Amino acid sequence: MKKEIYQQCNRCVMDTSDNEIAFDSNGYCNHCTNYFEETSKLVYLGESSDLALLQLIKKIKESGKKGEFDVLIGISGGVDSCYVAFIAKKHGLRALVVHLDNGWNSEAAVKNIKYVVAKLGFEYQSYVLDWEEFKDLQLAFLKASVPEIETPTDIAIPAALHKIAAKNNIKYIFSGGNFVTEGILPKSWHYDAKDEKYLKAIQREFGKKKLRTFPTFGYKKEIFYKFLKRIKIIYLLNYVPYSKGEAMKVLEKELDWKYYGGKHYESKYTGFIQSYVLPEKFGIDYRRATFSTQICAGEMTRDEALELLKQKPYKEDKVEEEKQFICKKLEMSINEFDTIMNSPLKTYRDYPNDENKLKFIYKTYLKLNKKK
Image 1 (cartoon, one colour):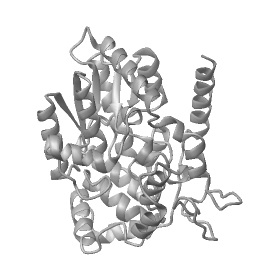
Image 2 (image 1 turned 120 degrees about the vertical axis):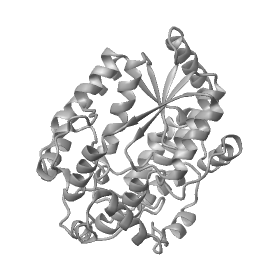
Image 3 (image 1 turned 90 degrees about the vertical axis):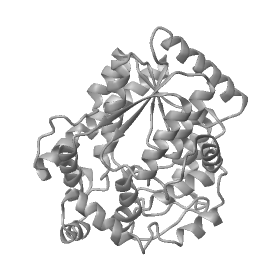
């Protein structure tokens, strides 16, 4: 996955672990350059963002006035989604809070969701995946030896949220995604989770079960929900001055929220995949993208990021215990897991996919939107 000659950006901490990275004459990479030229215009910008948020809240309340809810909020138990729920309550929105239960919730995440929902007085629903079916799909992606190991969850979340929003006639979905902590993510690290052809191809080749109940979210369903049902996804944290550290303090003080030990460790599987499997097998350390985004956003210095990157992304004294837990839950042996870890690296291009079709569809959509 890495380029033969190692190079690291002189401004952020992205490096040639992204094999598509490019550097200018100053040694600045395309990721932080794009952040400053494009993404920085999409984060909180003071008064203009405050006004935009007030207008958005008014529009959302107007859309929901005939129903029970104004907005649907996807929640994981993590900082971002819980803080979104907190902001929604501050603005007087009536929210239906929905969690996708894929069987991997940490105890801390479960408690966080319980406390947040109870304290804020929101309605709550859990969308529970069929474990045997989902487990088989997760194993298929592990065996496929691609970095998009989390595609099954990434596609199930929007599928579940849109399905429930449509059922309750809710026109707005709040997501915890944001440009302050997630503004940089190399395309070479994660292919489009909405490619159903790719997902089904991997399941056919490596899975043992048919996907009878698993919720998918390809371009057809996206078009259906976006244009026919008029459902919009809103990234609320881009409208407010967002600092993850400050948000954690607020959540701890106001909602009895507790930290779960690491980025995405609200899910035991996601935490293990991002901290151990991706760095050890693919040379992909998601901390580089997160830290680089925070450097660009002024949340962290480059020196602080470099110091943190000297440490392993996982706790060496805990990794064997985590590995055993993951293998036991997936009903695979440690030897099987080690074989997967040592298998040749693949990319989505090694399997049937709809890349060209999706590029055309999204390119056309962007062109039509610009003309409006």
